[in-house]
Image (cartoon, rainbow, N blue to C red; front, side, top):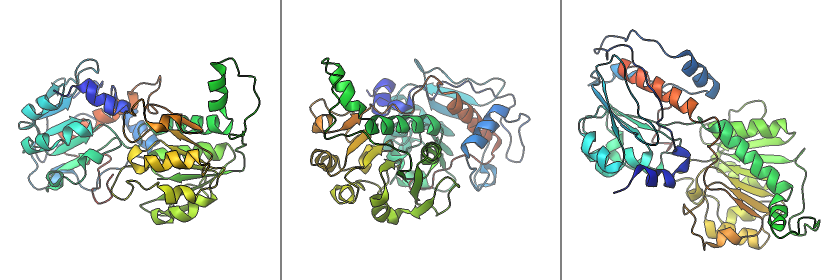
Length: 387
């Protein structure tokens, strides 16, 4: 049986995502009624801070809408349970995929990691479900599944929630590479830390250098903001439009990446995993980069051809790489990526911090409130885009 702990190991940034306490102070409304309770001001502030967008249609206006009676959520020890107060809606907490399969048939909504709620067996059982809430930004396990595209079903994710912390992790990787810290820390263990010979990985300044964000979404915007504050020129690509904030000098469409990548001293990938981004960074793409440039990936490991990255590092095609995601995950102990030149690898934990899951909990609470009211949900997944 796949346990919650094993599934969280596959996606460690999801740990504790369900430790919310959702307080519902009115019964679920009938089709044409609105609930008597209001949104939490703290949740409203977080939504504004992260720039989260509502879906285009209120749930109550979708044909076949009915007042929900039961929500099934992946929860339980050590992540806490979601409770309701004074509500006719039942919250059912399950601990793993098998339990979700058993209870999905009676659910109006299912909430949890994408590899659980988008499991084909779960979807086959979830005939009544109107809302699938994915508790991460990535939804790759939900793509290409017709059951999720039936009329009246809405799928949401947690886009941008971890953006600020992940951006700090990205900047940390960039600083570490540019100051050759991977060399100094390695020497420290053998007492050779006072060696100032950094041949093969010379320290570089970042001021006035160019940083390219591939994927100017919730995480990418936070990376861009911080890089600009450091005195870097920021350029970016995005799939939706050429629009961007003032601190990004140029925003190109996705197909401009091969041209723009050669201008960058640091390339940061914050892309979701879709058919269009799978293995996007291959030998040809790395060959377009400057030999002095760094590649940093905090998006999805599947956007990179791992063997091509190993070759690019070992042959000096690029200067270094910082990875919080890899393909495969977890990376086997004997994988050659561990021993590639000038690489720093962290175990997919860029979303973790001492701040905990407060923002995620507030957004989950607000999503449940909206679902019970039949309102517009936040961060609705567009399956044509894949995120």
